[in-house]
Length: 485
Image 1 (spheres, one colour):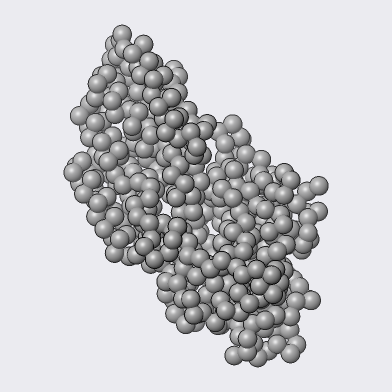
Image 2 (spheres, helix red, strand yellow):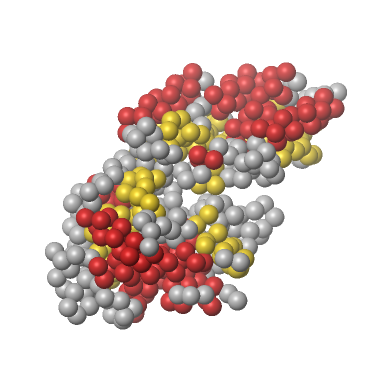
C-alpha cells in the first residue's frame, strides 16, 4: 500500500503529487508553478503575486452565494532535513514515503506534511463538486519556514474573504486562535587566525551527533539537546585547559529546527591525545544521563581528519566559545495566562566559522512583544561583550487570541456535532502566518487547524493517517456551516 491508496483518496492523491515536487524553502518555484497550473486547469481565477504566493478563487456552490467568504491558507515550502547516511538532494529529488501502521513517514528525510497536507486539503476543496460552500479562496504562501516572506509580502485588498482558516496546525482536535511572534538574530564575532605549522597539533574532528532535534517552536518545551550548545560545552574546557586549538565549528542548518548535529575541527597537542580521549569518554555518560529521556541516542565522538591550514587564535577561540555557551537558548519563560504554553524562547540554530567570523544564528519567539525585545537585548549584551555585533531581522508580532471569534464558535459547534466531544482551543508557541496576515487584514476572522503531525522539521516527521480523514470531514462540514454575511 502507498499513500495514493489511502482515504480520503482526493486528499492523499494531492499530497502525493506535492511529495514529488522539490520545494525546500526559498527554492519552491516548481511548487508555485504546479499550483498556478492546478488552478488554471480547473478553470478558476488564479493569481500569482509578485512574491510568488498563489491565490485561487472558487465561486460559491448554488444557493450558498450569500455566505461569508472563506480563505483556506497554507504554505508550499518545506524544511529540508535528512539523516547523515541518506543521499538526498532536496532541490531535485522527490520525497519517498512509506506507511508504518497508522503513520505516513519519509525514508530518512523530512516528510513535508508541514504544510503539504494542509495545502492538499485546500486543493481538494477546489476540485470538489460535492462540498457545499460559500465563496472560497485558496491562499498558498511561499517561504514560511525561513522568514514568512510570502505572508509578509501579501498586499492589502488582494484577499476578498471574511474568514481565514489556516491549515498549518499539527494536532487534530485542537483549534488554534493565537501564536508567538518571532525575530531572527544574526551575530558575528571576529577572530584572528594563525597558520598551522608542523608540531602544532594532531587534527581531529570532535562531533555531537544523534540529538533528537525537532521544531524550534513546538518542540522547544521538550528541552531536547541543542547540538551547538553541547559542542561548545565540550570544546571550552579542551581549549582552556588542554591546549587544544580550534580550527572550525559548524552546526545546524535551519533557523527553525533544533540542531541535531555539530562538529569542530581541532588540533590536539603532542602528548595530549590520551587525555582528550579520556575527557570525552568521561563526559559522554554525563551528557547521556542528563538527556536520557529526550535524547537517548546522543553521542560525542572524535575521529581523524585532514589537517587545516590555520586555526583560531587561542584567546579568540575562548571568547567565541564563551559567547556561544552564554547566549540564551531554549525556554525562557512559560505563559502566565495559558497553562502549558511557552511564552518566550530562543533556538541557537546555526553556528559556523567563516572568513574570520564566528557566526551565530538564532530564532527568538514570544507571544509578548516586549519579552521578545528584552531577549534580543540579552543576546546583544552577550555578543557585544565578546567583541561582536548582532543584527535583528524578520521580526513579526504574535497573533493575539480572540476567544469571541464567530468562526471559532461555528467550528467548535461543528466539531462537537461530528465527533461528540469539544475541540481544545489553544494558542501555539510557533509562528503561524495568521499573525502576519492579520496585520494586513485586521478584520479577518481567523482560526488554525490541521491533522496530527509529529516531529516536524526532522527526519522523524510523521503524519497520522486517521487524523487526516477526521480533519477533512471537519473542514467540509465547517464550509457547509459558514454563516451568512
